[in-house]
Image (cartoon, rainbow, N blue to C red; front, top):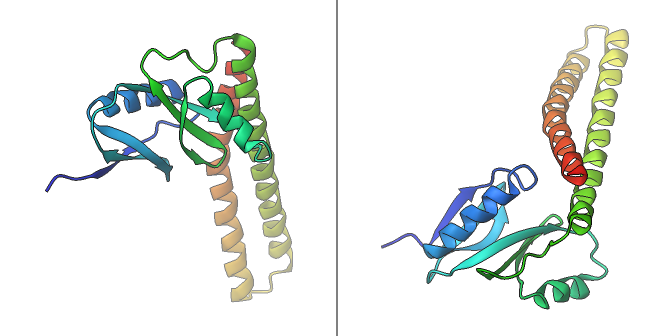
Amino acid sequence: MAKSTKYVPSGGLLLSEEKDMKKLSKLAGEGWILDSFEKLSYKLIKSEPEYIEYCVDYNEDKDDWNEYISLFENSDWEYVCSYEGYHFFKAPKGTKPIYTDKETLSLKYEKQYKLMKKSVIGTILLIVACILAIRYISIFNNGSNILRGLNFVCYVSAGAGIGILIPFIICAIVAYKKIES
């Protein structure tokens, strides 16, 4: 029996958007249609081949959801799925792109830049809090195993924060450069 679902890794919704959308379009031509986006990968379901293009947009505003979807559907783009503010659409090959001018495309990336900037600031605050906790625990540690364990947790959290910070910074830079181009 043939597999009816497969997962394809994403190169990053901001870092490799164009490449990912082309890959999804190619796979749709082979009968693998986008169903959802999960855990940094695209979930595809086996179906009849479709000759379509995909587009992803970023919009956190939930207040005007129906108006937002209508805007795309009026331009022949059909809603497929969403993931944390990222919304995927499909349309027949040759459909006019959603973003046709530099100004609206810059607005799209400006939203993503603001999100990345918030993530960078939040992660830096987490790291600073961990460093302060490490310092505080080190000063008052009287050999207690609990405080040593807590100190270890703070070191691990600070290290993880630094590991998370680097991709956020890269994404913020990429979004900023896309706004400028």
